[in-house]
Structures are given as C-alpha cells and as structure tokens.
Image (cartoon, rainbow, N blue to C red; front, side, top):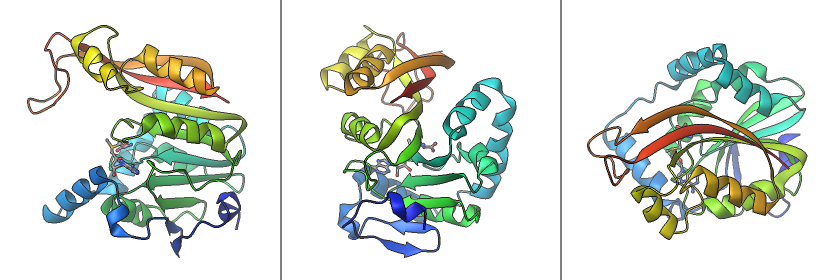
Length: 251
Ligand SMILES: C[S@@+](CC[C@H](N)C(=O)[O-])C[C@H]1O[C@@H](n2cnc3c(N)ncnc32)[C@H](O)[C@@H]1O
C-alpha cells in the first residue's frame, strides 16, 4: 500500500477501508474536536459533505483558488490537508487524484471524519483521524505537499509547522489559508503576548522562515474591520482589521 509506506514504523492505528484512526483512546482527542463532535451529535447536524464538495469544486474557477490547488497537486506523491474540518474547502483536489497523486484529509472530530469518509470513495483519497497537536505519524521527507485552511484552533501550531517541515520531501510545498490581525493592533498585541505564530502575517512568515521554509508569496483573499458575528471573541477592538491570506512556502 503506497499510503502505508509513508507511515512511521511502530505506530499503531485502526483501519476501516480508506479511513485510518491513530487515536486509540477517546480521552486522547483534542478538546476542540471533542467539543465540536458533541455539538454536531447533540444538534443532529448533517454536515452535507457531498453538497459542500460540489460547491467547493466551483472554487477552481477563481484564479486565486486555482493557483492554491495547482500548487499543492503539481508534484507526484501524497498530499496532506491539516485539520480538514467541516467546510470541505479542499474538494477541488479530489478531481486531480490519479495514480500519481494521493490525498489525505485529517481531523480529530469523529463526525467530520465520517462525513469525509462517506462523501468520497475515490481509492486515492484517504481520511486520517489523528491529533495534530502530537508528532505527525508520517516518516521524514515522505509527503509532497501540506495544505490547511484556518488552522489556529490547533493548540500547538508552532510545533505543527516544525512537524510539517520534517515530513515534507525536499522541495515539498506548504500552502495555508490563514486569518491574521494587523501588526500592532490591540488583537495582535494580545495574541502575540501568548506567543501565537498566527498573531500577524509577519509573525507567521518569520516563524516559518526560521523553521527552514522558503517563503514564495502570498495573496490577500479577504479583509475586514471588526467582528464577523456578535459572539466572536476576536477582534478585541471594533477598529482592528484582519486579512485572510493564501501563503505559499517551499522546503
Ligand atoms: C476551524 S476548523 C479548521 C477549518 C477547516 N480546515 C475547514 O476548512 O473547515 C477546526 C477543525 O480542526 C479540527 N482540529 C482542531 N484541533 C485539532 C487537532 N489538534 N488535531 C486534529 N484536528 C483538530 C477540529 O476537529 C475541526 O474540525
């Protein structure tokens, strides 16, 4: 199995079709994923992943998204999406799967894992139930590309970037869509004090360069002032601005 050739030796997992679970004990699930799962189950939410895949596939018609998905699927090998979540944003990749390109969606929320497993039965698509706050189960220099959409729920984002670097092949690619606060604004000051790598775009790029990545470029895909909805924790001040960006790195 090609997919199993990139899993580190001595790692235990359960396998059900194309779904692999690396979380052997329910107490090991990250809190955020447990909370999301409890909410989805108790509210009887249907994630409608098949529909989301269909809608998100249309993104390929937008040049910014085409660039993003071209970037992570251009080279032969296995691509991994980090904390894939309920949006199904990565679905344009599914039309690019081949005998030369495999893709793994990852998450730690069982409802999200099941939704992805049921929505796509392409034999080159895999779903990994795993905790991204721990060492990744992949061998050194085994993955051709990592992607991620809004990863700041992961508790140890900085450590995850180091792990991504370790697992990427030489010249491997790392592309993320992330939301950042303007350098110097109140929200930035607050998040930065906590040592978060995503405090600002500059902080994030600086951190990735320190890890060893070459920064290639970035594109702003959205900017806003103030909160998206009333209950949001951030920004702390209604005048604070944030931007959503696509950022491209290479090892
Ligand atoms: C804000 S979302 C990320 C957005 C997601 N990429 C999307 O497009 O929908 C949060 C997702 O990250 C997952 N998550 C949070 N912490 C995680 C961890 N340590 N390991 C694996 N998944 C995690 C959650 O289970 C949830 O599905």
